[in-house]
Every structure is written in structure tokens, then in C-alpha cells.
Amino acid sequence: MVEVRWTRQALLDMEHIADYIARDSEKFASIQVERFFDAGKKVEHQIRIGKIVPELQNESIREIIEGYYRIVYRIVNDQQADILTVHHSRRLLSNNPAFKGKPGG
View 1 (cartoon, rainbow, N blue to C red):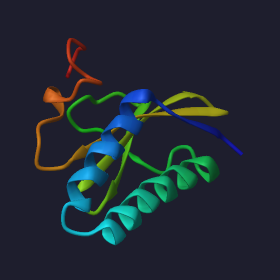
View 2 (cartoon, rainbow, N blue to C red; view 1 turned 180 degrees about the horizontal axis):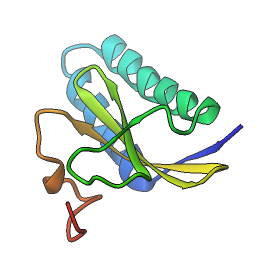
View 3 (tube, rainbow, N blue to C red; view 1 turned 180 degrees about the vertical axis):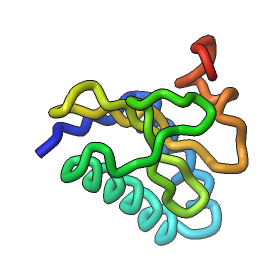
């Protein structure tokens, strides 16, 4: 099984998303966060389950789509993946702090 590590950025992203959803429904905020963690569990079982992020065209940077959100992760090696960010799909990935100043970001 693969070790999946959630970066500080990804955890902050989830916190902000949950806070926003909780304005209307704490129940649905909790459900959405659980879905994010479920996506991470998929990576634990199959590291290449996500598709390559089109903007970056880097084999090791992949994403899983969960509703309106992109869970973007980096394959460190065959035994480890880092969740880099949870990003709303209607926003430009290049504006995300996880990719600022990086090629393709």
C-alpha cells in the first residue's frame, strides 16, 4: 500500500472549502471533506489512479476529480504520494499557491 501524505496547503484548502460550505450546511461540509479523504484512500490502493494534470503535462503530477474539486497529487515514488492541493475546478490552477512560480503553473 502507498503512503499518502497531505501537505499543509492541501489541508488548508480543505479547511477553507469546509468553512465556505458550512455557511449553508455543516453536514454537507463534513460530507465533502470525507469525500476528499476518500479520494486520498484511492491513491493509497492505486497510485496512478488519477489522470495527468493537463496544464502541467508531468507524469508524476496527477489529479482525481471529486465533484467540483480537483485533488492534485504528486507521485514521489512507487511507495509515496503527496496530496498537493484541493482546488475548485472553475479556478485557474496557475493561481493556486501550490503551483505559483513553477513551470506550467
